[in-house]
Length: 332
Ligand code: P6P
Image (cartoon, rainbow, N blue to C red):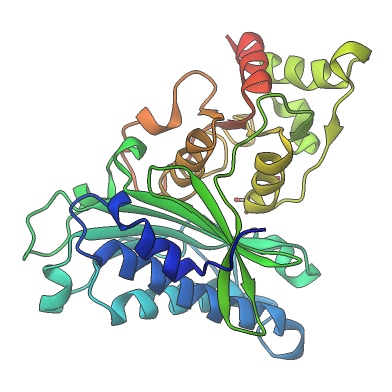
């Protein structure tokens, strides 16, 4: 049993992970921790307040915004803005990136990209949702306003990435390039404690996560992957188990711990897939690779893709090595 190490103690003890950082990245992660506690509290009592339901408008994705989507977005922006570690933020819920204009922000070294509440379609039916974040060192000069280029960096330039999963317990999982660690929130104490040290995704997975309702729209190679998972092969333990919640964070977290593959392919209804490269695919890809798994768009490493738009979508495959290699054999 791990001695009770809090997230704060862990960050300080692993300060060396953050190159050049004089504590800024540590402070940035503690802002995310605070915002996560606030969102967690709002979600846990959502049924008792007026926070459920839709706003009655759409975000740039053309998706109906849930009230909790907007709440989570506001909480993360205000918490991150109140400190001085970032010069700007890009969010699934904002059409354009947001530049923080106070001098303390313009002297900050980092930008953050965030999906404040992933899986919103599940919120009103009490199924697990999450927050996903991705952190970069800015490339524009310190002392100036953040620029578009700061947000369009390839995923292999991330300095840290992670997610909060608001499930049966609330867990913060992150990497800063030296492995993946998970911290479970103890609401009685109000702290996150190290509960999943050095997470490694099993090399052999037997769970697959895809929306099979889109099967008819998938390209032939994707159909072959799904049919292969469903064939009988006792030696390999097939047919594998299908698990799909409609929340990337929930499906990914389970597959990372137990072994498996999550994929959201291109299809006639989603020619480039559905997931957003900058604040869903890149952070999950960074975590996946740090945990010993693979993450691609079906042909290329997600982390190598050069972004061109803030909300661009890409086909997405991630998980255990055996399943990813098998999937690639059918796709290519
Ligand atoms: P579908 C949630 O909106 C999300 O971005 C992911 O969290 C989730 O895996 C996926 O979309 C679900 O999409 O089309 O299967 O409902």
